[in-house]
Length: 244
Ligand SMILES: *Cc1c(COP(=O)(O)O)cnc(C)c1O
Image (tube, rainbow, N blue to C red):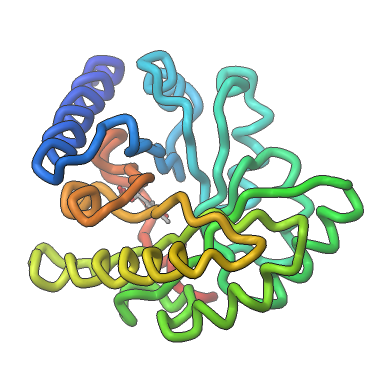
């Protein structure tokens, strides 16, 4: 068996280096890009190795897995974000442990989140998920729907709208992937300049193992990285990104 600890440490060093270089290329400050580790299917023991290296911003896709990991004492110092499709009947399982939800993509979800948060007397940071590829995932709003969606949910005082999230097209062709990031950044800049009440456009969650350097060059403030740190997952990704 290979040494997990060293593998994970080396992977993190490589990624951090690439993040720094992408920041330099795009004249950005490395502090403005957060690395979120996408930990689906990864054991707490292996996640803890990354946390010991200083990476404690973690993202989960499913309520059940989030729940079991957040109750693991090894991971008690983590900050959790929810990055997967959220079913409304799972809201109660997710809310107690997350600092941000990246995947708000429909009115019914926003309404139910608001109701629950109101009952608990607190607010939550959220991102609006946008479908910039039309293929990668069936989740997320069409870019042209985003403005009216945000207008509708902005009055919910419990939802602090902090920015946008996307999954780009899955392709190794730069000229197909970059336009997804550009589209999200343009939308982000437009919304930011409009400064709608109830919104504070700060975070652009885009870029994964295969494309995070392009995403950073296009303006990402949070990159979500899984397999480049922890290795290939045993599950098919369609389980996480496609409805049903
Ligand atoms: C799994 C996942 C990631 C990370 O994927 P990798 O390609 O393994 O880096 C990023 N974002 C979301 C929403 C994910 O589900």
